[in-house]
Image (tube, rainbow, N blue to C red; front, side):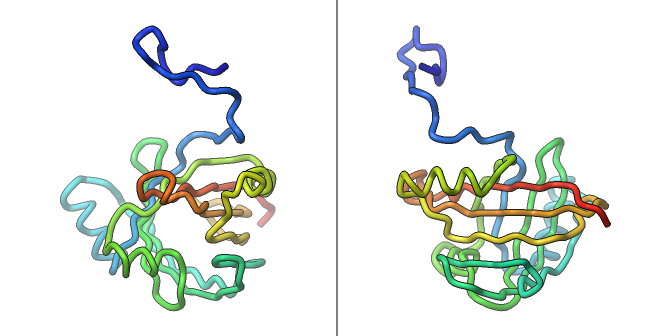
Length: 176
């Protein structure tokens, strides 16, 4: 048994977890305008500077929304706050879980991302438990000045976790 907290005060214990996630990578907020939101975060809270980039997911190795191919375009503004970064996501074109979230709930916190070593293995294990990826893709890009290969999956957890989607983020260095 792995204790979730000190059980001497009424805590709970759980058996081994289905999967082991790494540290929190980032929080993702869906916004109408990534640049305007970044300016607000910087001016109001001193978070920044933000790196704002556009992403054409038609350039990804694959990009699946609910298991179906899609080619949306995003703008993402990223700024670190300690070891964790804040990601402001603006959908510029196409239908994704981000645009669904924006229509349903408006702007706000959409996902909590964890770093993982093998997103594919975690996805396979969670699928056996009925937790499917809502969005899954792989892509080569540059992050924090370094060439990387990214595999991201957004899991269908918002009904299980009070409205929050868990994202898996596997990021491995690659040759330029």
